[in-house]
Image (cartoon, rainbow, N blue to C red; front, side):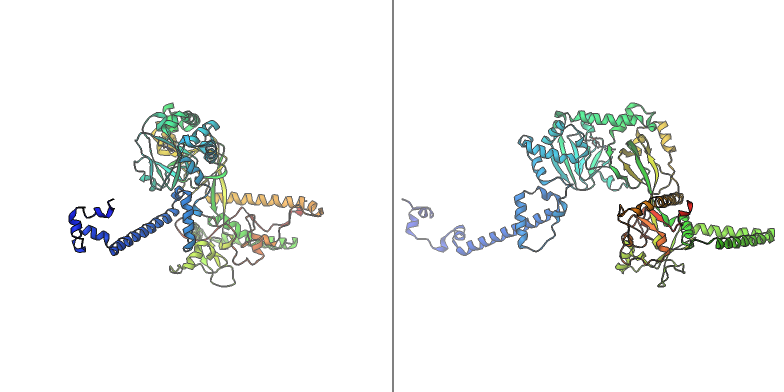
Length: 617
Ligand SMILES: Nc1ncnc2c1ncn2[C@@H]1O[C@@H]2COP(=O)(O)O[C@H]2[C@H]1O
């Protein structure tokens, strides 16, 4: 039997005749045969494999910070955890990223299966998960089940274009997580420069128009952030009659817009076009619909329910507040005796008589000079009213500053100081601010939300006369929000005139402040009256129905936990607790780009020193 080795030399007699010597072998054979060369090659191979493993590990670590980590199989995740145990302690980013808002890992696994492979239990699981989506919830349970059988999961990063304007439609989308913008350009770049782009957020759906009307895409849809979508492909869209549901939705929007007085002169086709380019959004009670209504390019229609327009009024910029405060802070501590009152009245009458005598003693010429003087004074006063100058009280012990100096510039390198200013801590204790009514302690700088308007079904809001930021809050409403130029595109002359003439004017901050102060004193009176009537009955009870508030309910400064600024506490010169800062600092729109001059506290009411109501009975 021929041995394998015998064939290597080519067989033949010559091999037998002349045994091989190393020098005679071909180079390739030499290479194979040398154990050192073999070892070297093996070593290189091992080094390459180790390098490859390291690179893969780096990639996997990197992926964990990315949401796509969810797409890595579970076993791989386990492996990574194993590797972690031996390595340094690292920040587990995915622990924080995977939240209930993201599409869960198990649901992703189900959507990755072809529809035929999904079990009933898996379809039910998916259907339950999709209940988070407002637009999905509206469908009948049967349709929901059918959709759960076919949806695909897709995840895109910021700036990724999902739908390109002008292309034929292939899919319909539900947003599970994230926000997309609708733009008119093809690459969606305008969404990142537009201050208020048209957005669609989680829970809503898009991409139905081109499918329903069998036309090309009417707009580009681009991701504003990392976005998770559930996709229904064209064939499933028609197979499960999703088109019927969406046509119903479109009809509802059309019916509503038909009732809006602004669009009453438009033909049905134009209203239908407008209905095509908008979405109805539902908001629960108390949810903020828009935190800044000042953008004139948007228009919001109230399709259902009621919305409130709120204004966060910074009382520390309102002259009426300072006038009111100056009166409150000068209130006599004790109730005046009758005799004392008479004496004061007599004094005032004396002063008045003296003044009137003086005025009548002036000549006409002198009176004119005086008038000039006062006009100049009052114009200075108006100027000073516009800007509240803040002064830092440098003298220890005194809560009120005598100097009216501009605030000293902050040393840039002193980060701690900057931090303090930003957080509002720098304004504690030592700060006063000067107003036309004198120095005010910073602790009375307060801001309050005031309702300026209420919008009902069929009403709309746009074109605010001034650019103060207003907040729109839902009272359980459904709204339709769109760009004004889109409405204008389909409008006739009558509608355009109506739109351009529309100017919504709300009272100034100072007027709102006056309303607040009036309401506040009425609230305080009601409270006092209630105490007067209810207290004697309560005192007869062994246990009060609610625990009585103690001194501890006072947090920082003179603000209690119910958000009532207590000026009577300020009069008693109660020392504020030093470092505790439990009040809510108000975020004011006008201070967006600057450091806050003064940090107002968000309050609900003001408590002042009041005389007892006992005498009223
Ligand atoms: N103004 C808008 N507001 C909300 N969604 C819109 C608006 N304009 C277009 N869309 C959606 O963006 C989608 C783009 O593709 P379609 O035209 O298929 O369907 C469109 C609508 O679903």
